[in-house]
Image (cartoon, rainbow, N blue to C red; front, side):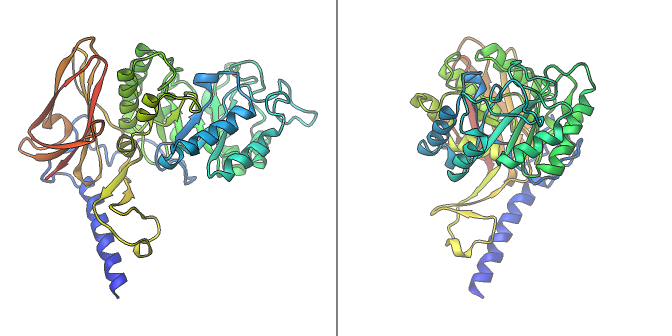
Length: 436
């Protein structure tokens, strides 16, 4: 009886926390004005494969290695994700991008791993990655060849290729859009989606259509994420433009399917530490995939500090932390426990977005469970500036008193009505505001 009572109490607390985030007109104020009724608007049909309940996290080879990849790099990257603690933070997918296959299919029409760079084959690599508790991804293209022109695409070979990928134990498919012969984009991606539903039900389907045909409006019923932008480059202008392009599609994202402004460039050397911190913060707030794009085998401590900030990751992944302690054996299935907290997954899954902008001084915000708000003060100017987030912009009543958690300083304070901070050039401040 005592155990049952504790479980009911725990469930009641969790249910209250989640319900509080959804209840309109509560004491903390109306929903973010920029969203309208974002938590209830559904403009897409989510694919029902049980994957992507939170944005995908992991690593992808392209941004750093481009075509210079081999099985040794992939194995060592998997090792590094474990050894650095990144895997424990949620970085689970190890994704091989373009150039992993031979230029031509075999006599049966099957894709063949490149004999020089992947001599052991993809199946052996998947086994190695799986043994570490990680997942393996590969790349193909909705055209006759991939973007590198070094390997075949999957157009008109969709079922055959998915059968091959499944036989190897592949967990993720990034599907590009090059060399498509001008054929209808929705038809091409639908064919691969149907093949995955039939022969690869455990494969996370990441559409890489570059946002040319507004995939947010049609890809939700096909896959678990869809690119809303062209390829990112490792510079400030590219990163900021991708953030802006992705922002317009915020209402289409949610559990099971996410907007994708492309992979992370943090650690590749083309931006400053402040710019990379902004990059990671905005991607986290926007519920974008967190796919590391640097060489994690040799990353700097500054890079590791950014991509391993568990408080920022929690905003992206929707973890709602409760300051309670329960023995593990008392927790129902689906709950996790540490010595000091329990947490449940935030089913809200609302993408944060830009809510204030004045001459490059911006406030981005999004709702979390428990009537909390995630807020980023982002200075896109080249000079130090004070940025103020007003409660009316972030969805709080003007009189609300809140606890302010600074996710980069890892410190807490209080505020009422607004929050202001002096922000360095191209840098940001990131907070969670919890009504008292």
